Every structure is written in structure tokens, then in C-alpha cells.
Image (cartoon, rainbow, N blue to C red; front, side, top):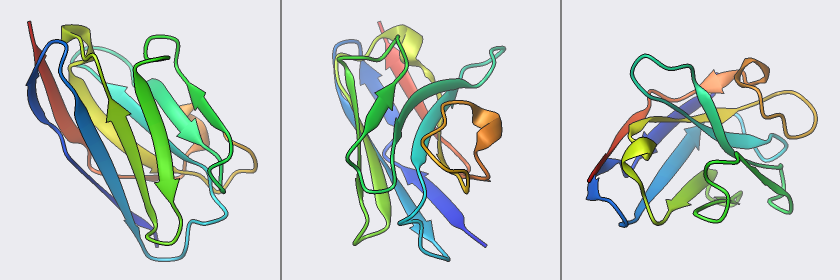
Length: 124
């Protein structure tokens, strides 16, 4: 069984930055794509960013391109999401996810393992 644990969320003012981390335990995820999603109250879960198994390819949702950066460290079995120039509309619970599917999917239904989430609140 794979376990994912997010950390790094918190309260930040608009324009500020946060760095989210995802620690994985269990079988190695070095052959799996990793992704970040978020879900705001009353809204569907939204794709933020994904990185392929070796970290050479990254993908971003339109609302975060140029502001968020995803990375991974396979030696440490971790992934990170650097979030800059945060906006109040970025307020949500952020989830780390891992997939057993090939490639680097961007749909939440293609991910098999999920963390519990970390709250990010951006004040105006």
C-alpha cells in the first residue's frame, strides 16, 4: 500500500508564496507520475500540476501556469509544489496523488493513491 502525506499548507497574504511537500511511503513510486490537485468548498477537484516518473516532464493547469512549479526527488520519494504570487482564489485543500497508469495523466480519476490534503488559505 502506498501512503502519501502532504505538508506545508497555511495562511498567506495575496502575492505571497508557499511550498507544499508530499512524502510517500510504501512501495517505491519512482516509476509513477505524481500530481497535485486542489478542491475549494463547493467546487470539483481541479488539476494543478503533474510530473512524470523521472521528473523530466511537467504539466500545469491553466490557472497556475507561470506561478506554480512542481518537482520531485526520487531519492527521497518526495514531491513538491512551489506556489508563488498566490491569489485568494487559490484557497483550497491541496492533494498529492500518485498513479499506476502509464504516462502523466491530468484527470483525478486516473490517480490511484491520494494524501489527506493540506489547507492553503490566501487572504486578500
